[in-house]
Image (cartoon, rainbow, N blue to C red; front, top):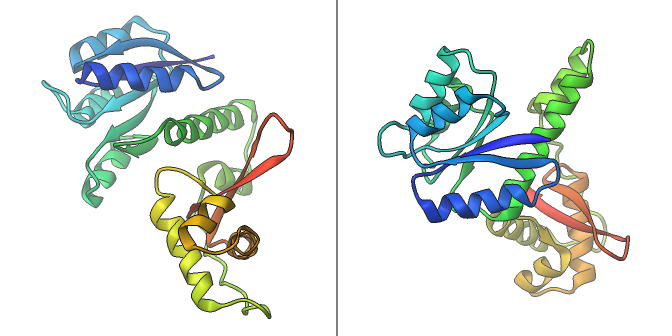
Length: 225
């Protein structure tokens, strides 16, 4: 079980974020704090693996608290949550040792994907006695050169391809889209949307994940990369 400390100065937001964490299998909300001092106390008590940390706190920024936790030698990980989208803020967070950077507002699924990626990262590293370069690259998500979209197959339209790609990138920022949702937004048939989505996913222009429902059949969900 991964124990999470939720830190947000807004009591309502903190409660919502804690609920989001609690519904993800393998994660437990160990404590909630609304400012830096009680957050530090909770970490120093022990038993915290991950901090879901708001950047804008009343007495100390989330980045400042992250740096202080590092200086004190606390072996924890941090996911920063903030409305700040500036590139320099993202760079500062990475340099401070933040593992993920999640932009507000986000959905439960948006946070779930970050938590599941974190759990996978922990499991991959903890289970390995030694890691070769290929495994390290897979674990850290080392950027790769995107594949070019292959030559347009017969029966495909470049305009429709660009439309589908734009829709997923614009509407799938904080969530993943199904073929049905894309078909409605693009005003094309579901089967047509599926064909173009498959082509874009195979070329590396879109991300593809599978979600299994009660029927046992996976639903294909697409996101920008």
